Image (cartoon, rainbow, N blue to C red):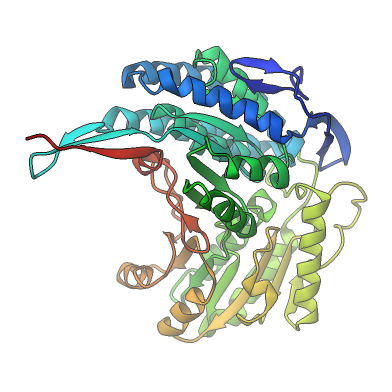
Length: 474
């Protein structure tokens, strides 16, 4: 990639002030793809200054002008779609079929929906009391995105910022930086004004913390771990920034005894294995009604045994590697913790799959006879690991499901629509997926408790980047 090692600031690719380098690793081969530069505080200052200067004029652009730029960006993205998918496969390790059908597709789906939402956005309205309400861009925004769904999260932050008239500085994960560089090229080609969008690379303790503390950034939008979200919130407090967070999860998946066991257990296991388990709202805690528990365990074992792990450049529905050696070590530690705590290991375990000696591949793993006090039931593993917990009654399932510091998503499996609705309303989660329903672009994405603050996507995503101003006239 020709711009690797550079930052996109004020409409130009420039050499960073920092000289600190980091290798970008292909997680399937452990080979170096390229090197990036990790931003210093001075690099962050330069990017923020460009965004601050650009906000003066960009915030005054019309909705129609911004819609034109977004529509050009959509056309460019579609033209470079396969390049995006290939880049995500190489730096994240997502299997190519999944990269094309899910990872890269998110860049189209969310952008199309934001265009629709922007057309419907009311930037001025008259309230019931006759007074005038204005919605205006909040200002310079700091955006920090994760490695697990890189393009998905870039679009969910960059597009609402630019759509509402904000300017921004994006710091993607240093483990998957290349797709962000592609997006910067597309934004440049689409004609967004210099300084409206700026891209730096860097690590959280330096670049991320500098952004969070920066007095000229008025909003931080972060997706990642709950630990990092707490640090950003503390850093941002000094300047009373708006902070939106999309953090971790340990989503319960309640399987009632009236389901088609083969169908719902198969879905439940494979949904966790998707993206190598590196999904914040994955249904990793499978709560199964005791009357069908033994049969569900048999089905889960059969599905787990049949799951394959392999080369992400080959088409198919197999599982790819974890993103890095850091993530591999974390997943291995938690799998061992499950074994040590006495959970029944049905499938997988520690170590790499048979016949694989390189890459950050891990065995798809399923534990049965788990209780909700175990580490594997309470901590976000972020790997292809399912834990199965029996429950007795509807009330018991709700109690176990809500017994978590997280509240991102929850899942319900039952053909009984009334029961599904009744249970869903008692679950402390931002999203409840019933019988495998998949979230649509435009629906607000976010959670309760330590899973975050704010919502991303559609109209809710736009409103997070806006301030409300009242005009009181005599």
